[in-house]
Length: 611
Image (cartoon, helix red, strand yellow):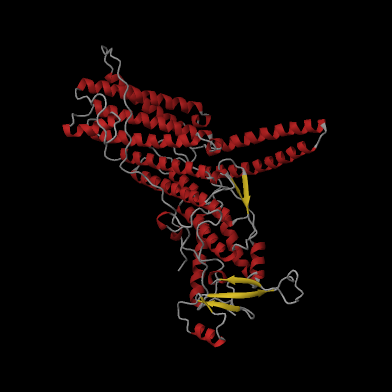
C-alpha cells in the first residue's frame, strides 16, 4: 500500500504552490461589483437567467399548443406565446445593447481615439463538484472521500472565483490556473469509459441562450473563450494616446485572436453559437483588425510627420488602407449567415464605420503627399505610382502616369480629398443610423473632426476659376510594415500544483502486475518481478495493473465466481510511481471532437507538468 501521508519534500513544495494559488485566486477575482464594468456584467448575467426562464416558458407553451385540440385553450396559449416572444425580443435587444456598449470599456484619457469592441465573458452557473468526485474517489480509487473535502472545496472556490476575474494580468492568471486544473482533473478522473457525471451549464456570450453538456471539454473550451474575451477587455481599456498604451493594446488583441484561433482549431459542433467555427473565425478577424488599427495609431504617435514629407505621408496612407481592408473583411464576415443572425448590430455598424473612416483617412494622407509633398526623385516614381494609381508591385503602368507638374498634382490630390470627404460623410451617416453608436460621443467627435479637416484642406485647393471636373481618384494600395498575428495562450506560464496530487491508487492485495516499464510480465516469476522493482532508481517505474472488480454473473454462465472486469490503468491514471507520488500529466487541449491533437508548429495545447 502506498501511504497517504505526504513526503516532507514533495508534499511541502506542492502545499506551498497550493497556498500561492489560493492567494492568486483572491488577487485575480474582481470583487468590486460597484464598478461600471461589474454592473454591466451583473446585468448581463441577470438577462441570461431571464432569457433562460422565458425560453422554458415558450417551450412549455408550444408543447401545450401542439397537444391540445380545444380552440379556446389554443387561443389563450397563442396569446401567451406572443407575450413570451415579445419579452424575449426585448431581453435580447437589451443584451445586444450591453454587448454593443463599446464606450464602457474605453479608457479615461485626454487623447481622442476611436473606440474598440470588447467581448463580454460567458456566464455560468455554480457547480457542485463534491458529489461526483466523492463517488469517484471512494468507488474507483478506493480511498476515503471524506479526507478530500479540503481539495474539493479548493477546486470549487477556484471555479467560483474565475467567474468574475479582474480585467488585469491577475485575472488572466486566475482563468489560466483553473484551466490547468481542468487538464489535471481530466487526466485523473476522465477516461473513455468514465466521465465525471457533471452537467456544465454556460450562457452564450452574444445571445444569452443557455447551453449545457456533460463533457469536461465544454468547460475547458468555455474557460478558454473567456481568456480571449478578457484579453479584448484589457485591450479596449488601454490608453492609446501614448505609445505604451498602443503597444499593450496590440499585444492584448493579438492574444485574444490567438485564443479564439486555438479554440476554433480544436472544436467542432460546439453547443453554443459563440463557440462555433464561423463565430470564432469572425472574432479572430475582428481582433486582428483592431490590433492593426492600434499599429496605425502607434505610427501616428511617433515623431510628427511633416506635411511636405511625401514618403512619410505615403506610408501613412498605405497603413490606413491596410486597416480599412481588415475591417472590410470583418464586415463581409459579419454580413454572412449564420454569423449575421447573432452578431450585435452595433458591432456590425461600428466595423462598417471604421472601414469607411480608415479608407477616407488613406485618401486624405494621399492628398497631403500629392499637394504638400516636395518633388520626389525619379527613382522613387515607380513606388509612388504603385500606391497612388493602385498598381501591383510587379505590374506595368496602366493609364496615366503619376503627374509631376504642381497643377496636375493638385488636381489629383483634390480628387483624393473628394473621396476622403465622401467616405467620412458616409461614416457619419452610418454612425447616425445606429442608436447605440449615437450614444458614443467620442466616436462622433473623431468622425466630425476628420471631416472638418478634409473640408478645410479641400477649400484650400479649390480655385475660383477651376471649372474642370476632377478625375476619379484610384484606391490607395494597402500595405503595412507590421502585420499582427494571433498569439496562442501560454498555459505553462502559470505554474499550478494538482489539487488532488495525493490521490494515488496504490497497489492492493489481489492486483496483478501485467507490465513493467512497457514489458509484459504476466509469465515472469515472482522473484523476477520483485528484483525488477527493487532495481528501480530515482527515475521511477511505470506499471500496468489488472484489478479484479466484482460484478454481476456473466450471461449464460453458471459459474458463481465474480466477473473479471479488467481495468488496465497506466501509471498516469493510477498516479503510482516509485519513489513518491507523481502528478497527473495534463491531456491535450480539448477532448471533445478534436480536429488535431497538436497545434501548428508543434506548440503545446496543454500546460506542462509542474516540476
